[in-house]
Length: 101
Image (tube, rainbow, N blue to C red):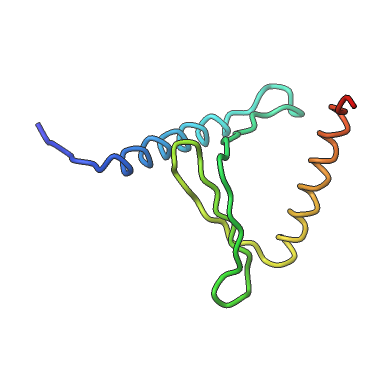
């Protein structure tokens, strides 16, 4: 028997990583209908965006509800496209659910 000791935070990160592995494996399987395929979705609890040290990329860090985090580096053009797409998506969601006044 082998004993492996983990800090609590390391265990949460491992658990989140295993979830990512299984999601990636499942996403490789396509449905018979070529127009439909699985989409892997990961809930995000918190985000942070900062420029990198060289001011060349925008670094987007996202945290899962479990506390696991991952950081993505976006070129300025990719960051601008993402910002625009996010604004459009939020506007569409708000239009679909108008608030009562």
